[in-house]
Structures are given as C-alpha cells and as structure tokens.
Image 1 (cartoon, rainbow over the protein chains, first blue to last red):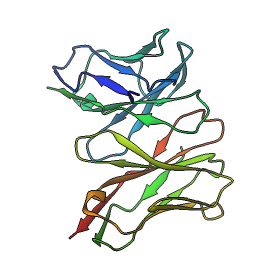
Image 2 (spheres, chains in turn purple, yellow):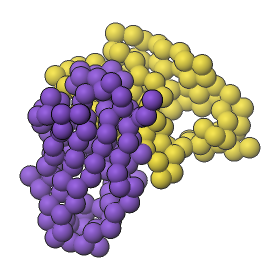
Image 3 (cartoon, chains in turn blue, yellow):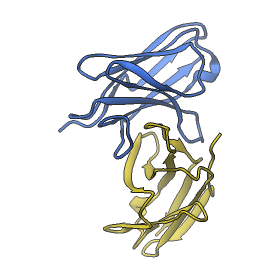
Length: 113
Length: 112
C-alpha cells in the first residue's frame, strides 16, 4: 500500500518563473492538503482540495493555485516565483476533510534563485 | 490567529524518558497531533488525540492532554538514538475542517 507520494523531489527555479508540484494521496484517501515549510519553521497551510474543489485556503496569495483530479491526485502551482517561495512543500492526505489521520508525503524541496 | 508553542530544544540520555511539551490557544481544538520529522524528510504521524480524551498510549508513546490549561505533551519511554528528530505539535480548531496549525517544532537530541 503506497503512502503519499510527491514529485519531483527537488526543483531549482529562478525568480519570475512558474512551478508545478504533484501529489498522489494514500490509497483510499480523497482529501489533499498542501503546506509550505520554510527552513527552521513549522509547516504553514496553503489550501485543501476535496471533491476536486478548493475547500479551505490559508494566508497565501493568489500566485498559489491548485487542482485536484478525479483520481484524487493534486497539483500545486506557483506563479511569478519569489526568493521567499524557497521552501519544502508538503502534501498531506486524509479520508474526508474532517480531522482524524493525516499522512504526509516526503515533500518537494523548491529553491528559487 | 490561533497559536501553537513549543520549546526549541530537548536533550536526553539514551534509555531515559523524554517529555516534549506544547501549548495552544484555540479552546475549540478538536484534534491534536504529534509528528516526527527527520533531516530532509517529510512528516511522520506518530499519534493523535481527540479533544474529549485526556490520555492516549501507543507502545513507547504517551500523549497527555490538559484542556483546561491547553497543554499537550508527548512522552517517549526508553528513548533511543533513532528518536533524535524534530517533533511537531499540531491542532485542528473547530470549524477549521482539516487545516493543521503547527508549532515551531522541538528538536530532540538523544545522547548515547
């Protein structure tokens, strides 16, 4: 039973570029949340997708957008990259957006130069 | 907004018990979690507790919840060098859906 998977593992971009990160939830899970973890800090909630719709959003600008596909996998898109977007991006999956177990993937390390 | 606080660092000897503490401000928290993060890795779910419980035990891990003081602790019995990592406390507030609010993490160092 595969857990949460994310791709790519690492990514290097330059300011102003756009990036797409991908996540496949744990088998049987239908809800995907995205978090940003800056170096030395706890993760910060970006947004959550359930039934292919954005259900909740944290305090992130519109440059951060996402999508959920019918197979429950999800993408995080970031436009007009800034140096401050450099972070570990984590995906979490759960069964329904109502608390309980939430499992995280290994993350994508994004470096913006 | 709601806040979750943890001490930055804890050092223990191998074989001792470790206690990692967390305080939170959201009195309507429904679920509280402990995650472990090793260098360069994602978050590993260790355990979680529903807010109507005051204790949960799972092998070497014991979680204690004091709702009155908004205090959560994680006790690791017989701490091993492999337990060295950063431990994050997180909570879900009422009406927060599934959104986790994390503390800044406690770095646990286990000395042989």
